[in-house]
Length: 193
Image (cartoon, rainbow, N blue to C red; front, side):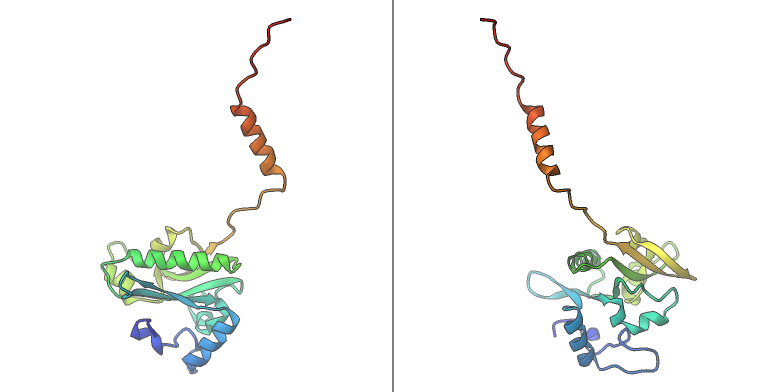
């Protein structure tokens, strides 16, 4: 595995409190039902800079027990992210953009994540390194996530993935015709014969 060592055996999200879960068994189920269940961010030399785990909310039973939970059954849930280097916070942004794009490509209705409202002035270490499973609320705001419900400082945040709506058949041709007409030179008046 190329993922950070911390990710190899962690089953916190995959198990309920007081119950154990075999990671390899969970991976097999997740890949059969969903496919790849996360993303790695690597530099040009192949060194891992960060990782993120996400998938259908049903794959992560612990999410049902969290404050502000449970996540919606129709959502893809971002459960955790790990940054190797705190001096590259853009890696977290890239990982979220990857999760958004992949969830949308797979036909998901929404992407959800648990958020925490940090007091102002929190350090990047506190906001992005110490808590790998609950994301800063203001960070999620930048992507357009909205609060579903909250419990104290913890929130379940949701990003609807509606996207572009298809254009009615034939409408495109009508628009192109109108544009062409608008840019066509006016006919030159003809002298009477």
